[in-house]
Image 1 (cartoon, rainbow, N blue to C red):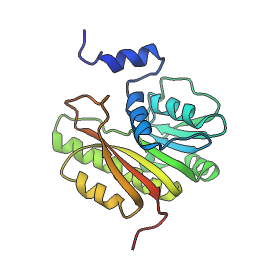
Image 2: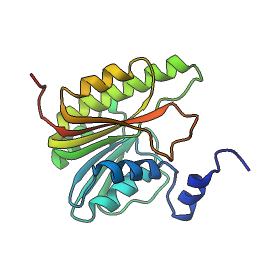
Image 3: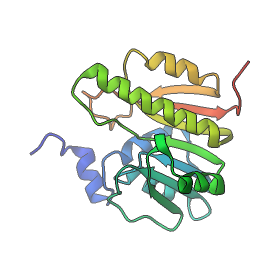
Length: 200
C-alpha cells in the first residue's frame, strides 16, 4: 500500500470528500469554532474542494462560500458555493466584483500551498509569501470580529508572522491537526476577533 493511503485518505474516500485535508479544517473548526450557520466564507486555495465542501456544510443554505484556486476543483459544489479559477496575487476584475458583492466575510480560510521544490528554505519562503497575500486580502474583506485560518510551512519567519497577526486579531493560535502527517512541517495559524484596524 502506498504510504499516503493512510486512515484519513481512506476516510475521505468513504465519506465522498476529494482529499484528506477535510479533516484538518474539521479539527480546526471543532477546536476554534470559526465556521457557523449563516456565515459568509472566503476559501483561498480551494482545489480539490474538500475545504469548500466542509465550509458549505457548516454555513448551511443561509450562508455562502466564495472559493478560488489556480486549478479546477475535483468536486461538485452545492448552491451556496461560487468557485472561480483565480490567482489571488493578480485578481481579475470579475473576482474583485464578487468580493465586493458577496463580502464582507465572517471568515477567510486559506489552504494555499506553493509548488514544492524539496529545498526546505525555498518552500518555506514561498509558503510565507502565500500567507502574507492571504492576510492582505483578509484585512480587506473580513468583517469586524471575523476569523482567519492560514496554512504555513513552519520556518524561520513563522513566529514574526504569527506575532504580526496580533496587530489585527484579538486572539492568535498556532495549531497542528492530528490529521496532518507527522513528518509534515505544515501548521495552521488562526486569528480570531478581527479588529478591523491595526492595534495602537
